Amino acid sequence: MIHHISIAAGNPEHVSQVLAEVMDGKAFPFFPHPGSYIVLPLDQYGTGIEIYPLNTELVPGEGEEQCNFVDSIKSSPFVATHAAVSVPTSREKIEEIGQREGWKVLYCNRDSVFDVIEFWIENRIMIEFLTPEMASKYLEATHPENLQKIFADFMK
View 1 (cartoon, helix red, strand yellow):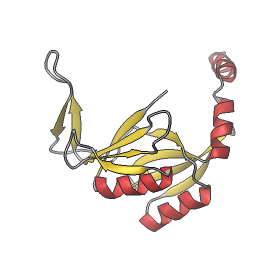
View 2: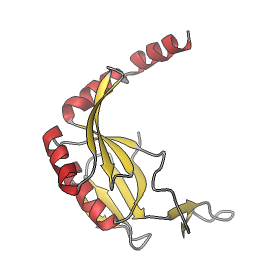
View 3: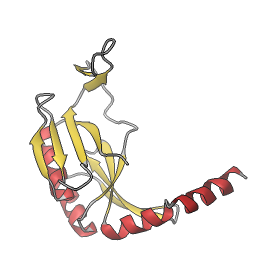
View 4: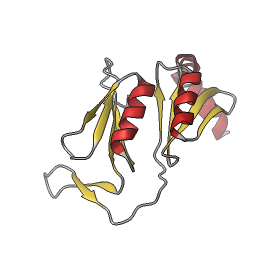
């Protein structure tokens, strides 16, 4: 289970407020790194999304030192990192929020197995949101027995 992820954004405070709205949660300043925020739906899993300022990098510490926050001189506007996140929000509400923000939102069917909504934060980083109905299909598709069959068929 993934409990939290982190992303970088041009406007971390605004992005945290929008994500809190979609996730039916709350946004808080993220005290370990000034200028960063964390969105918490305050669920029983400790789910969270940390939003750092653009160009923030996490680098390993020396020896037993924890990771460090470093400001990079340049970064690509796009990243390979994304997450699929179940939310209590309807497809219509997610699309309305994305449209209001001017961010791309796209309903997608993944290989005729399950559906997601691509939600492009600042039109540069994607989170796949799953409504409650979408989440149940996703969980069915990713049940261990089904995954074993899918990957066994793929390896043939």
